[in-house]
Image 1 (tube, rainbow, N blue to C red):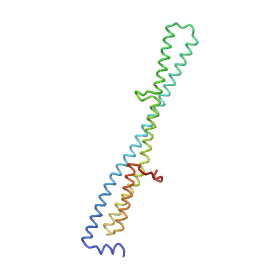
Image 2 (cartoon, helix red, strand yellow):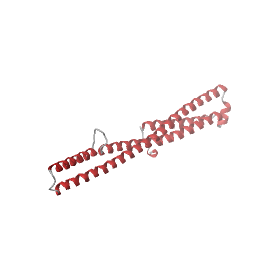
Image 3 (cartoon, one colour):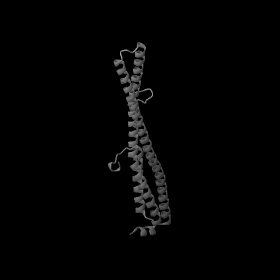
Image 4 (tube, rainbow, N blue to C red):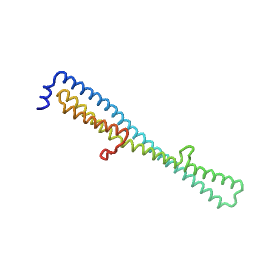
Amino acid sequence: MDAADTGDLMSPEADDRFKKRAAIMIAIMAMLLAITSLGGSNAGQDMINSNIEASNLYAFYQAKTARQTSYELAANDLELTLSRDAGLSAEARAAIQKRIAEYRATMARYDSDSKERDGKKELLERARQAEAARDQASRRGPYFDYAEALLQIAIVLASVAIIAHSVPLLLLGGGLGTLGALLMVNGYTLLMRLPFLE
């Protein structure tokens, strides 16, 4: 007996019950599809934002390195001036030594500035955190993509099942919808890592 014969044998009450259950299942899967789409969109946006942040932080790190190098060269040059020019007055020597100390202090602040969190050490840490956030968002993306595809296929199968009065099609749609829902949940939580999706 094929699906068409089974559909003909359904009583009107059973047919209504079948259609109602299928409609409820379609509505639930459509809701899950919307939630999945939102999660996928957010994962993509998080990935882009974190990547931009990491890029900016690395650029800032490089700028700090260039400035630090220029201060180091200037301090070295002033120290060389002090060692070569014995005829400098005490005031000139004190001014040069003060300037060297300022340059060295600035260089140390460029290395690490825990107050402003913009020293090279802190910038590297923040850039690595942004990269980790980008990588996590990147891992979440495929789960949402596959969940969306499975939920869309499940909705189509459930819709066809109503027209064809086919219980097997409805069950197949329900199975695919369940798998899509599980992938969606995993996209949000990353509880399980599926190597073929990452």
